[in-house]
Figure 1 (cartoon, rainbow, N blue to C red):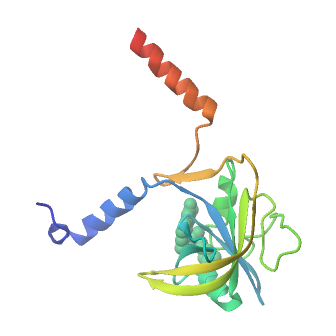
Figure 2 (tube, protein in one colour):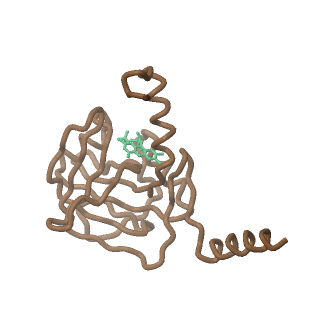
Figure 3 (cartoon, rainbow, N blue to C red):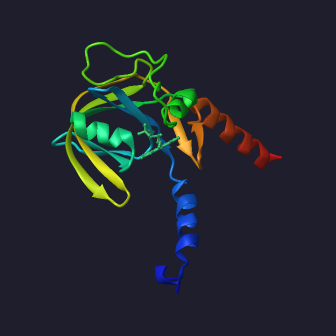
Amino acid sequence: MQTLETRDPVELANAYRLAISNFSTGVAIITTNTDAGPAGMTASAVASLSIDPLQLLVCIKSDLPTRHAIEESGRFAVNVLGEGQEQLALQFATPRPDKFANVALRDGFDVPVLKSSIAHFVCRLSAALPGGDHTIMVGDVVDCDHVVDAEPLVYYSRRFSNLCSPSQHARHAYDWHLELMM
Ligand SMILES: Cc1cc2nc3c(=O)[nH]c(=O)nc-3n(C[C@H](O)[C@H](O)[C@H](O)COP(=O)(O)O)c2cc1C
């Protein structure tokens, strides 16, 4: 029987990275505002947590500036990216002072809400819990909205992807059926 104890820790860590990359996720930009200006980062470790109360969570590596900025401001937004927004995801995944250059924001929010997101959640920080080398940021959702029938940006196997549209699914099924008949 294979037990965790028998596996070399380095080999196991590599196997974990590969295995978890087969869990497809969406991609979001996590934003906040501080006295020094806006802060933001790309994140895929986002999950719905609770309906009553309305809560979601984001896992952020503990030494990242955005994590400290959220704890300082006590609020954050989760901006869900849509199909074709890979460049925006990369822009916010690279440490640089001008992450918000050429990024259009919606008016009326005290945290940056991206105009081009397909959904957004505005949160009050409810808890920052230890999670290994990450911090689990729990947010109380105070506002949210979405674009109807939007196509999401997907992260799978360490690359960006998108969902097959229903017509593509139909075409694949049709091709497969034709092959069986030949
Ligand atoms: C697709 C994608 C998903 C990511 N998801 C996360 C995540 O869930 N949590 C995290 O801490 N970093 C994640 N990162 C890495 C951060 O975006 C990156 O470290 C960024 O530079 C952090 O910004 P900051 O240094 O300004 O805080 C992800 C990067 C990419 C490209």
